[in-house]
Length: 178
Image (tube, rainbow, N blue to C red; front, side, top):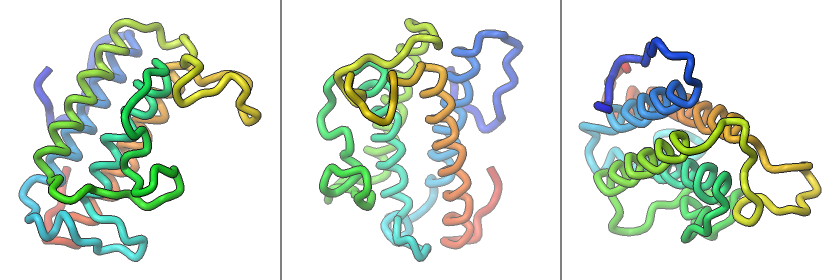
């Protein structure tokens, strides 16, 4: 499916297909927001919270993988909290030295391909597997979330952070729009 700058309007009652389209759309929004920024702009924070556009991008790469691969499938992944310097969810986002926009955008879209495969082969009512992100004896939850819940959560993460990038891009060079 080609990436589009137009919000999806599928004529489909297939919820998984709708999620795939919207997640693809928001990945392309993030990609477009960062395109044309200089390396210095990508690595400079313009906000009191201190994150940079590249740090937000690495967060999105790891966030999607944490929820769909490590979370839903319970596959072991290398550094599931890899967007955090010390592998703790409360830590600030971190981009390793030598990693740039192109590499992270490629990883973002590769993660999207994996998400599409998961959504094509699983029912949205299925619960996440135990053993990855979710433990059988989690005192905060009775059971891992459903794939549907994970889709909504990841979609809202993308939408929220795309809005953050709107602001950062306008502060960086005045660019506005989708």
